[in-house]
Image 1 (cartoon, rainbow, N blue to C red):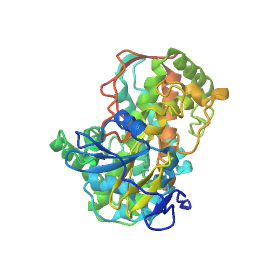
Image 2 (cartoon, rainbow, N blue to C red; image 1 turned 120 degrees about the vertical axis):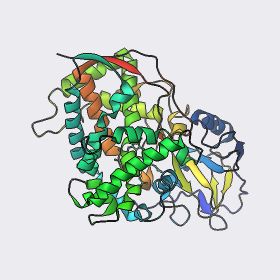
Image 3 (cartoon, rainbow, N blue to C red; image 1 turned 90 degrees about the vertical axis):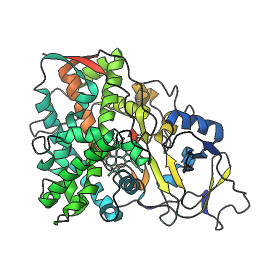
Amino acid sequence: MRRARRISSHIAPQGSAGDGNTASIDPPLVQVDCEGLPPQPFLKDCSDRLGGLFTVRTPSGKERVVLTDPSASEYLFFPDEKTLSRLNAMRQFNERAFRWKGGGIADPKVMDDIRAALHPRPSEKFADAVGRGLVEQMALWPATGAKELFDVCHATMHPVSEALFGPHFSEAGCPGLKTAIIDFDKEIAKSIYQQPLNNEEGHVAARKALEAHMCQALKDEANTKPTCPLGAAVYGNKPVPSKWGKFGISNVWAAQGNTIPATFWTMAYIMSVPEVQARVETEVRQKFASQPDSNGHFDYDTLEYTEACFKEALRLKATGAEFRIVLEDHIVTMASGTTYHVKKGQELYNSSYFQHHSEKIWDEPESYNPDRWLGANKIKLKEYQYLPFGAGDHVCAGRFLAKAEIMVFVALLFRDYDCALTSDWPGTLWANAVGVVRPDRELSFSFKRVQ
Ligand code: HEM
């Protein structure tokens, strides 16, 4: 069931109700020297200087209107279908990153079916399958050793893909999945922001490898089988032309593209502060000791401190990347009282970075502090101040699954191993960020199995 649409009272189509006496002005302009999206800290700085709405213009003249004022977030997240595109991110994303036109996702019902397939109940089942896969993989680790953390975080890739898309995406069925997703992912943000790719050939080859795999699954009618819940949600459970596989790969990517870096930062931050790591270890070694239960179910609900670490890592490293196309001229009034004119055809952009790093919302926003989510210190948030998964009609469909798999992975790692970082803390690749930002290099850690 879709939520009722709401329209913020301070938004009005031009020339209709609304404050007819207020003169609206164009949002202030920021000329940047790159074609893609500038790093989030730069945009936040612009926001702090210019207010909650401004236009970024690239050297080729491409404009994006950046909305950072949380009081106007509702405008972005609860769009009036007559004035803003209902299909927004996923469709834009598909058209840009995969050059995919028409069909499938253009039907809003498909999104509703994807949501139903990823709801908490099915997600619980998928998470158990992922947990099982992780236990099997970790059983193959030596008792002591060293690994690259980002690489380790890919461990959920095959179990998740198999749980959602069936055996075609199992390790045996698709051994090249990891390589194809990594290669594809390297350039995806540039693709979305229509920039020249560094390695166009490699990107196209990786996209084609993923695509061929999804096309083969459709040729084999995988979506008609109960083992492929997301395939059935996307394509229906009847045979469809295999060329539709082009769209399906965005779902395979959606299931991995953000979860892997989110797992990375959650684990990395925990290991970066000895007291935090000690508290996580104590919690998971006590409360997660007998997981999974006799039914193969992993219960992570009682892991309060670990959950606080997950939330805090997402606060610092999730960027979102919500973009919407304005279909009618509007006037928008910011918290400051300034009224702006937003025009038909403009692209609106928001990132949770602006809210998550705001000094007006968080005490020492750049510090990693899981305790801000707990007990007497627990922060009281207003709507739209914490949005790692977006909000409104298009809030992330995979958020339950993402949380479940990250919680289970983190709990298994720190329950069964003593871990320690062994290389320097990486930087963050903010430019062109989509979803969850990536580290700019690997992070090594050593591990020793707990007896
Ligand atoms: C930590 C992991 C993840 C993060 C931070 C994340 C973030 C987001 C955000 C911010 C949006 C909203 C985009 C918008 O409003 O325009 C979104 C949408 C979406 N996400 Fe995720 N995501 C994650 C994991 C997943 C997973 C695991 C799946 C699928 C299995 C998934 C599937 C989707 C889909 C289908 C949408 C589009 C929803 C719509 O347009 O109605 N995501 N995600």
